[in-house]
Length: 514
Ligand code: ZN
Image (cartoon, rainbow, N blue to C red; front, side):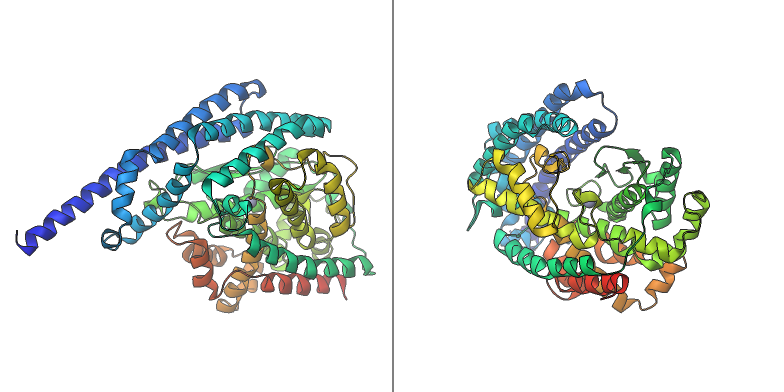
């Protein structure tokens, strides 16, 4: 065979392998979307008693996808496509697909199907038990479920394997290459920097009145406000929708179907504003991914940490910033003239940035938020290492809240039962919130350097500049790059806590005057 013929034959072989590989991946993708629709429905629409049956359906979908992922077809294709001489011939998208699926495959191949199914059934039930336990302040009924979830997760970590700590195996599935060691160092420096800031705030003589935020803001009007805020930041409703759920979330069901939820408390307007803008940030990310990647497994956010950097970027840095409210406050007053009578922009800005250590993470301020994550992180580490068991959680929770935030919850409902995540089996997930906060501050620092007129534009109501910068630099590429690559490319350095701590110090020094 002459060289030209050889090359043609090789290229044909490569394309055939790639097509076969992608055809199985399309099936996995379609089933995942079906599962995601079913999960969205659980949170927003499904009758309470439907949960057991739905759990069964989802566990079967999970099982089918798992079997497809570890099938002979995928195994042989991956072996071929990961080989350097073949991998180097792939385009950028196909290379990313091989990287992302290879990672999934390596993990899934190591975990027995039976264990994955057991976890899926357990977490479907646990989620319902958790919701009831939270409603009735009955941690005891949830504790055995939580204990079982951690023990299965420990088993999974052992199957996956790790270098230093079983926690590494779990956190890595949410944040590529993140380890307990790196997190220990980030959290230790945050504790060292944030606890003194909190102390200064507590000692400050500045007293902020935020009582007007707790007046009655009717639900219907709040829903209209949510929609308007989402449109204001650039969320596209012809590619999405807004619902309410117990725990707000965003879900991507394809390039033109990215749904968000919020929750409404009539006597707490900021709860809804915060959730709407937060989920809007996630929504903008998903809506901003290159639609050409939509039918592939890389057409979504790069990692949970990067995702959270987008939601926190909008919720806190933008949505709790003076420039944003210079533009939006008049609209808010127009909607709620009675509730905001006599309130100035300055009053409002201070009120929404009041620092009060609170029991509820999702309603906590920027200064204390990461301390809430520290509590959960340290608890997860201790449970996973066997240092404590699930019955120890309530007492330990109180102790750590007291130590870091200076408050002790009176009930488990406002303590260790407040978050849904553990009932889902999401262990190693909470640190992604802190990664998001740190990363958001890094991105904002870079954006401001590149766009010196940024804050004036935001104040004039122009949020397009923000969206297009994030779109070009972060959203568009989906998962074509790893989280670390994105952070380095955009900021020119790795993830660190420097910019976040600077941002917190500068902002709260202005507000609390020390
Ligand atoms: Zn989020």
